[in-house]
Amino acid sequence: MSKHKLIIGITGASGAIYGKLLLERLKSMQDQIETCGVVFSENATAVWKFELGEEPSGVWKADGLEKMKLYQPDNFFAPMASGSAGYDAMIVCPCTMGTLGRIAGGVASDLLTRAADVMLKERRKLILVPREAPFSLIHLNNMKLLTEAGAIICPASPFFYSKPVTIEQLAMTVVDRALGLAGFEVETFAWGSSS
Image (cartoon, rainbow, N blue to C red; front, side, top):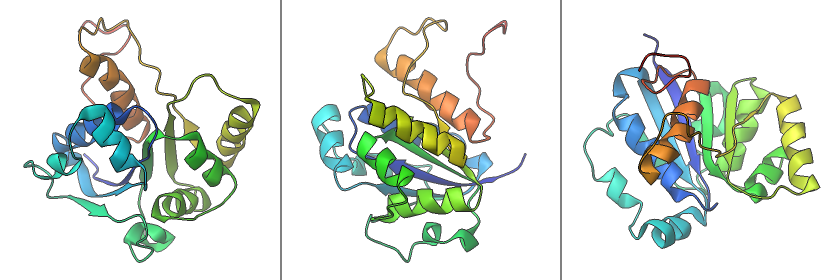
């Protein structure tokens, strides 16, 4: 099994549960990770606290994060700020439309947008998980532009055919889909499977 060099970006979009579940899922997939850099946008922590009623640092106090490192959004000396670091994939989950727009415009104003810019220029996997509704024409045009540049737009649209019974199970359908797109082997419900 190949090991991945992964970047996780978490922005201030509503849907902090997606970011939390993504980090928790990665803890159980350490055998597939070589290294994982995590960066929160400036507003991500505030939204996380508002929606989940806890500090994001609670995730970092848990065991199983030996291969994951948190970077500050203003740290342009972090490895992910350069293509020479050789990261395989980046997932931004959830992704605000502001962040998506800055990435589409090539505006690398913080580490998260710089890392995304690096992924595009290096032709690596960039998976953006926008959580917004409805989409404006500007949003759609930015998503079209990013798709043409090589990014994958994976909206935070959970599926129901796995018959989830909790909000966490529902949100996990999006998280697992994003991880699968990034190249991870994820044990999850698949349409047409017997499980």
